[in-house]
Amino acid sequence: VEEVLIREFPDGATSLDGEGTWFSRRQGRTLVERSKVVTLIVPDARAADGRVERLIAEYKRRFDQDSVLRVERPVCFAF
Image 1 (cartoon, rainbow, N blue to C red):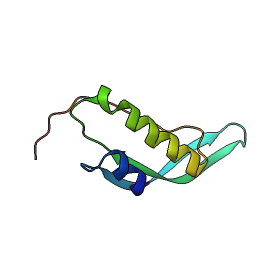
Image 2 (cartoon, helix red, strand yellow; image 1 turned 180 degrees about the vertical axis):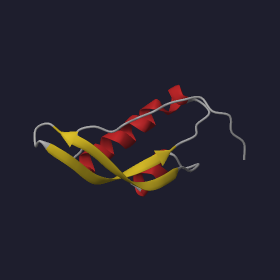
Image 3 (cartoon, helix red, strand yellow; image 1 turned 90 degrees about the horizontal axis):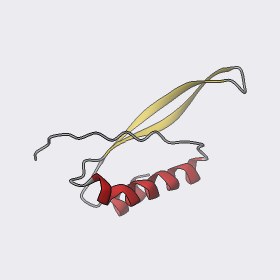
Image 4 (cartoon, rainbow, N blue to C red; image 1 turned 45 degrees about the vertical axis):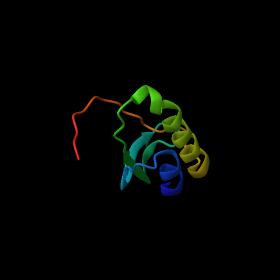
């Protein structure tokens, strides 16, 4: 994940290990799997959209995922 993340967002990002849990109707049981939680702060979300989509597509391909949650919201930040 980090190699693709830095390629698309060389100014940096935060990546945390996570654990996803959901109920699979198909299997009739609760499933748990390792995941990544990535935080990106960008000045222009529209301009970053293609890069975010490439990152999501690569994660889905490499880890055989059906979906990836994406949340966008405006924030105030400073370094």
